[in-house]
Length: 167
Image 1 (cartoon, rainbow, N blue to C red):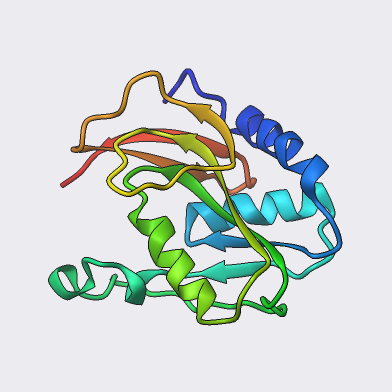
Image 2 (tube, rainbow, N blue to C red):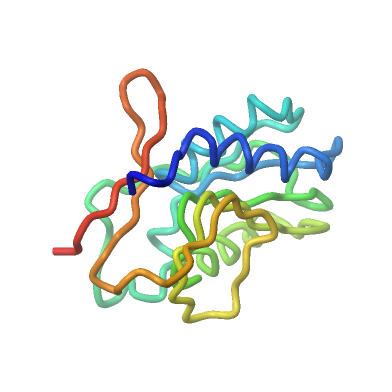
């Protein structure tokens, strides 16, 4: 979306999170756009805990009907989840189902003290009672179900948002 500056939104998201970062804070990015965003936030916020990454492919509630994503990634949680303040990071919040899957997977690694959600954009259209604690931008009106809002990253690492149609 041309009117949304993904770089500015990323800086805004970092400023929302910054006052809440402590020694037990850890970021976990949801592949792919959420991990890109988490990598940037991790560096910008100087978070001491190592960065985690989650691929929710096996935890999705539509796994039986859709099967495995063409190129599943490895989930890596390189810190002790027990008692941690975990911030799940995703690029775009839509139905809430990806967040639910990420929570299910995260709890397989331990019991965090607190889990919060940070997203660049809330596009509306929730199907589950999920809300982001940190959100840089909420669309004024939900996107149509056949539309996708995707975070993209160029070769220089700069972010952009692209509106596409589902196949």
